[in-house]
Image (tube, rainbow, N blue to C red; front, top):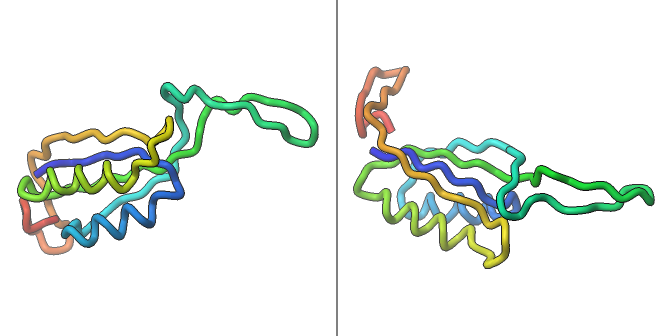
Length: 112
């Protein structure tokens, strides 16, 4: 199993969720986060005063998938979230040693 963590632009969330559901991803955790990378924030004007926004709003997606669909999930994520502009996000992939469904006690791939 793989844990896929993706940080994407917020307006891409629904499109990405629909695409992942289509390929068989059954569960997804979503968090609103702020951060910066090469984008390094931007300048905004509020009530006539200019100020720097150092942290840009993003959405963090986390999902555990079976190894058999991990590559498809990564490809779907990257192609659907892509706008071609700076700040499109990042995808991280980690191995998952074990998963347990609390309600039933199922383990491994059955738990996801």
